Length: 176
Image (cartoon, rainbow, N blue to C red; front, side):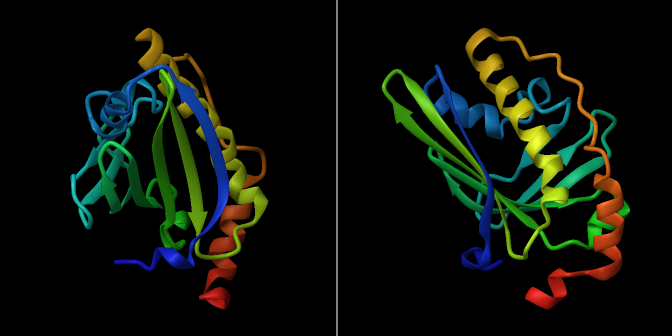
C-alpha cells in the first residue's frame, strides 16, 4: 500500500447535493450509476481497502486503474488513479482521489480532492480542473433531478504536449 502522507492536495472541489450521504455514496460506488454522470465511464470498485479500482470507457477499455486506499461508507472513499488510455501517462506516479461526504442540514457536502506525491505542473492539472467540475455537476444533477448534464469535454490545449515532455523527463524521480 502507498504512503498517503506523501500526497499533497492540488485540486479541491466542494459541492452541496440535496441527497442523503448514503445516496451520494451509492452514486460514487455503484457501477450501474457512474456512467450517468462520469462521461459514460463505469467505475468498478472492490469494496475494501486494498481492493481494485477501475474506470472503464463505454466500450470496456480501461480508462483509469488503481487501488482503494480508504473505504469508510458513507463518509470517505479514497482511490489511487493511474491513467491507462494515454500510453505516456502509464509511467506517471499515481494520483490520489478522495471523496469526503458530510451531512449539511438537508443536503450533503461533497469534497473531492486530487492529491499528488510529486510537484505536478499546472498544465497537467488543467485536465482534471476541466473535467472534475463537469463530473461533479453531473453527479449533482443525477442525484437531484435524475438527469445527467450533456457536457462535451476535450483535453485542454497543449496538455498532451506537456504529458509527452513529462514522460520523457520524469521529474517525479527527482522528488521521490
